[in-house]
Image (cartoon, rainbow, N blue to C red; front, side):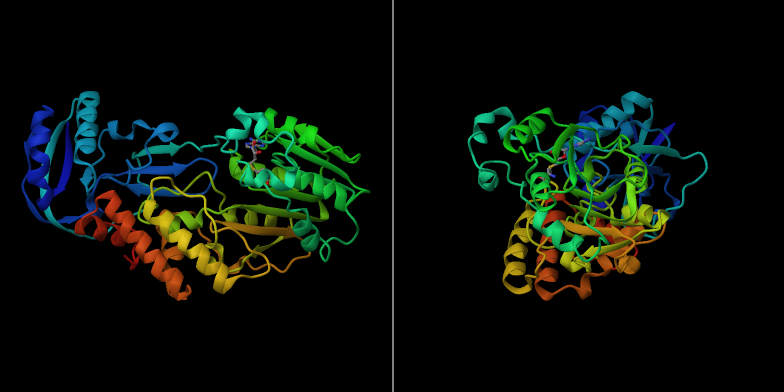
Length: 453
Ligand SMILES: C[S@@+](CC[C@H](N)C(=O)[O-])C[C@H]1O[C@@H](n2cnc3c(N)ncnc32)[C@H](O)[C@@H]1O
């Protein structure tokens, strides 16, 4: 068997000596003025816990960009998948090809090409390799304060944010403000999912002294800190893994709150279905989280094939809410507003980091609204009594092409400064990834529309 390795003419001479030096069995294929992407042998990637998929050849560097640490998959050892070099670290590419040759015994047919035509069809094909990328549910919050408890002990919760627990705040007042016009009566049972240090949970116990308030959390360290810091009589902290069903009766919970925690649920659809079944028919779910679209938008072309699967996708939660007869209101309602101050992002993208920091400042100066979410975060309110505004959000079956085309296609609607910063971010990302003209062309062809570089 032979692995077809397609290489742009301009990169061929640069790659060949390394391939020979690595003693990869190879032969030279007939050079092609044009490479039709529609004819490549591909693999089909799906992503655990969300409706997202991409059909792709082994298109380097996109398929390698996240194959590190917990994402590592032996995809480069798959047989009968074509390789396509589009830029990036030549040594890494050659090492992967050498591993592939050793694992499969396949000879590499090196085929230079001048330019691309067509696009990779996204529909799965019979007999193609199907690879499921596991969800990363590593607990990001176990930071310095867990290793050194003295950092937070003896510090009032108002100052925790300045002492390493940076993403902890008290959202109770915000929850109360949104809940007040929605809940038909004061809540009797309130649950905070992934309650962390319990600051918001305790705030809720104070706002609603007649309710029973539970904070559910997996981290022992966080539970211990929460229990020693807050002692409201109606407040209980329990150990619970949000990937497992909630231990409450169906329809029992009047007010569900989750702040920056649901991204850790392994199977988003299953968790969403369980959570909505436990909400009372007139209840409210205040769901604040990081949103995957920001990765799609800002971190393009890193985001070309991989959704950021440790964030949530609003349509997953709106879909589950709908199946339980609930509506979903997203705040802020537009994508541009969803891409605002502060950030949690892919660590490798320095261009994005710089762009987001600037965007954050501009947003605060020019665009500040009463509810100021983070640059990558949104608030979803799920209830029978909210006005649903999810109509302009993504639908379909989760093809990366469709998601990206929608997300990137909103570019012209963005404020000028967002456009300017997104462009800068994408250009810097493409440069960091080492994409040449052919690589950038591949991005446009994959998405099927102009993508703004
Ligand atoms: C970013 S923190 C937010 C904490 C809190 N809601 C707040 O706003 O301060 C995420 C929390 O989710 C918790 N967490 C992570 N995985 C979890 C799981 N599988 N089950 C329950 N909690 C989890 C973490 O321990 C952490 O406390």
